[in-house]
Image 1 (cartoon, rainbow, N blue to C red):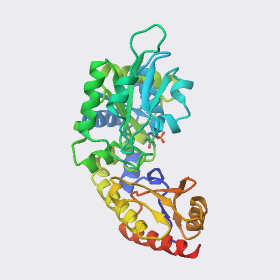
Image 2 (cartoon, rainbow, N blue to C red):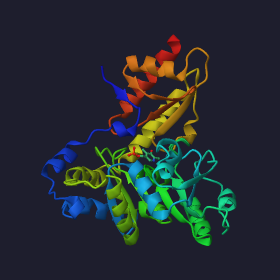
Image 3 (cartoon, protein in one colour):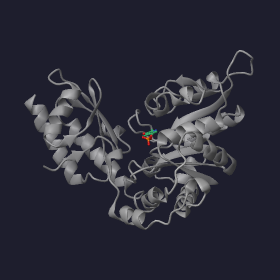
Image 4 (tube, rainbow, N blue to C red):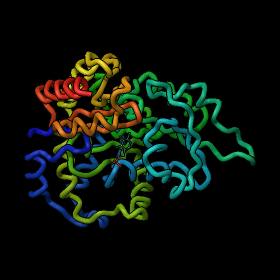
Length: 346
Ligand SMILES: *Cc1c(COP(=O)(O)O)cnc(C)c1O
């Protein structure tokens, strides 16, 4: 049975070209600064993002934590959305490890945070208050239906941040999806950020890793913090080699994932008992609702599993499907008909 795995874009395996590059990579001890392949990835990533320098890290979670710890000192406050990945899925590491005080504000359905809310949340200089230091924007916004945050919004938060001397970190785990969906240059989209983290291990299909980008002093401090968190790696050029191939070969095809996600949403919207608005699907993440009493989201995913279609229940009445490199347009048709049959059987 052909399994169609739509649980996440993190399930993607490295391509043959990545495996070859990994086998042949020139390596050295990266903690000693000796790995030419890691350096090449960091420089390539920085140049794509329009930043001075980059730092290869094991995961997006570590990249976000390091960035927050560079921007904020002990007890400083960071402003972030209440639907953000940093707030939900990173174990509260910014507080638990970074000693950073999180101030959450409600995300709008499009993943932005209203500017006036941000402005109102910024603390005046007062001995009672923590110091507002950082604003975190997630792009694309995972829990807000994978929505890309547009450049106009990024420019507006930049202005606001400048007025109040806040730094901006972009959790750009899927920033390449955002740039593809918005049809703009990635460096323009990353321009307003002081720092940005992106994942090589999601839609770009590399096996491991993320890159943090920012100016040279920022990356210098980030390198120090990566070491204390246990993220100093040795012959990591083996991994970085796949990351280079990811950046060179896997970016242009993300538009296919977006078209497949939209096709899936369109198919699902025509199945009785399911609800999704295909026009809201801009990138590779499809959240849809199970709107019948006959089956729960979890039961439906278990049923689909038996027919080789894998998705994750993301709430009592909600399922998440993420298109990726291993899922073609034919698979989307097949998945849709499997789901239609499953819904007819409950
Ligand atoms: C996946 C993800 C991360 C974390 O990346 P890991 O490599 O899984 O630690 C951070 N932010 C967002 C929005 C993500 O989707």
